[in-house]
Amino acid sequence: LPIFDGNLVVRIVSRAFHIIAAVIIGGGIFYMRAVLADSGPDACFGSRRAVWAKWVATATFLLLVSGFFNVFAIFRDAKAAGEKLPVAYHILFTVKLILALVVMFIAAILAGKTPAADRFRLNMRRWLNIAWNSVLAIIVIGAILRMFHGRTPADDRPEAAAAAHFTAELIHG
Image (cartoon, rainbow, N blue to C red):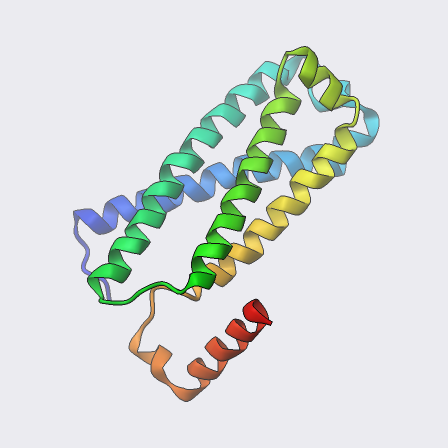
């Protein structure tokens, strides 16, 4: 069991904020795409565009701050354990970060009030599809990244080594 101290509490709070912010943006994108997009931009926002824009800004801020805190904590833990995260971890994290920035940008531009935002909203369905597919990819990549850190002694069992080898084969081809 982990030691329940101030550091653990901060990490739990950071992860909770990260997940809540991801749910806000990802859920909002899903709802707009699945329920409202076919009716056009007015159905997605109507007079509520400014409210959604504030939620997007808040969630984006929380995702960026908590995300960088979380990844630096993971790097610090690996270094303290004398381990080095594999190159595949860094590559996957970079892809996840780029996809997250795409999602945040699309959510922000669709909620924006500029002429550029108006042009993006003309293709609302397309941008929501791109954002939603990016969200799905982020979830899968995040699940894979979780396998690279937080190892326990049980991870040294032969079946755990076989699973790690299988994952490495998927990543490296």
